[in-house]
Length: 235
Image 1 (tube, rainbow, N blue to C red):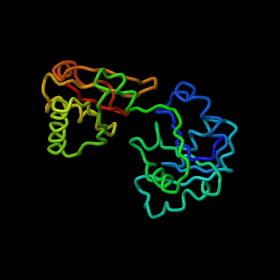
Image 2: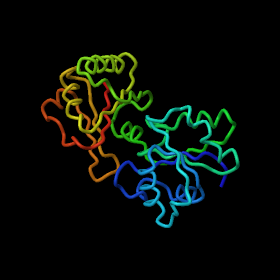
Image 3: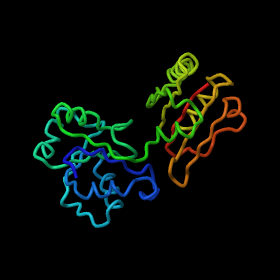
Image 4: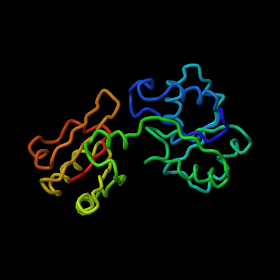
């Protein structure tokens, strides 16, 4: 095993890790004692599920999330600089992709430390694959504005890009606001524009459906109110 900063994907929900993560990853994780995590609680939950024999008390955890002051992470890579492999774990999916971690990776490159990404589920890539939309050019836009006026303005801007740039547009919303986002989309966009909703990916609640805005108006909001979802727009 190479000494490196390993980017460790986790499950997207309650699905068994064996369904979405290679056994190779588990062998890597068994040899790592120092982790940079989005939240200690979620990281421990994953690690215990991933390796039932793991000794949590022998591990160290440093949190990196939206509440972390970047001034406090300057020494996070100290174990790696001393020759001990480290791992980054986000709360769901792949670290550094719509999740914290990129600042640490940037720091590792500046220090000429090896970075190794491991294979695992990414809701962004899975949703693009399953949408029927362009996978040659796509953009992930994170969360759209919460205020209705600003949200609708952003939606129109994204719609313009799908026609002018031939680019699939992706974004997310807090699960409890999925219905409000859906309503904004169908009331704002052209009837012929297409919307894909990909929710609960890799879990028992998985839902993936692509329709035109006109078709979505007829069928109504799907039952995804409390489930993480990605919304994709295309022409």
